[in-house]
Image (cartoon, rainbow, N blue to C red):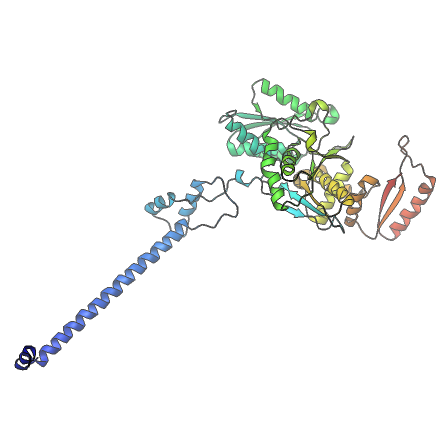
Length: 471
């Protein structure tokens, strides 16, 4: 027998001692289990609280587009206004992380939609796209050069805090510059012809601009007089003229913004680009970029016909031609009548739901003309601004629409026939003899005799007649 067995035989374990030992072991195990549960619960609670606080302070919705500049102050304010107020220590920790997330107004310039016209083009293999520049913060394509010109002037040391800006404008550039000056803290004086719409003047004043009026073109003034006055005011030391007509930062804004956007949005399929020409910054910068990507892209510029007054489009005298204009960047120039531009402008609102100004109507008219001659083309037209800044001029009134459709020439036919759908059907198109240039009277007596009878028949059918004058 072993020594352990002998010892166990001599000293048996008493029952009471055994029960006491078992009880102590059970107590020790229960304490250990309780301690483990307590520690685990404490860790989980601390982790949940930390996650809850972390969500409250730092969680943010991802940006839909890349953001170049963000506001730390605004982002910190957001973290402090959450459902659980962060402690000072947590605020300090959050401020050391990248929690800046809000756009500024300046960041929202550009990136405008490109939409397809669905009804005006009719049955065609072509695609006509409209670049909605009215979606910019101040409501027009001019927001782009306005911000660009001020930013470039600051980078070149030409502007200091509190300086006064001076600019001659027919409306959209003035509104855009007034907005940009308000953003950056500059004073601004805007010189414009007296015949511009009240909405434009009110918008400039709302941004804090000082308005100076010159006589309209019909009274011997116009934009030429406004530009001359701006130059005189700068020479007198009243401020700095940014000069949208000669400032390379104007087309640069479109070379860096509008052109790349169109190229990306069409996936490089753009074949024709149509733009009204005022300062010519839009067409210069966009043409340069698109031609670099695809040399055979056709660039079409618009100017008003002799005697037509279309807001945003100019037919400059040679001595006032913008110095940023380079003729070789425009493949074709079209003349647009005021009647055609305004008629298409109204049709855009009624048929496509695009509320825009007369220059945009001119651009779409040109796109429709092109489409009548082309197949499988992708045509992009610039919609320069919004229609609400022209309401006081009466161009959207029922009285103005009553004159549509007026007789048109063959060159206007594509846009005129597209606009027919805005009028009661059935629709009729009558090709008649053109009027004599010297007398303005129809030279074909047969057409003259037949026309009243045809008009009467169309009226009896409650339809609409479009007369197209041909030679």
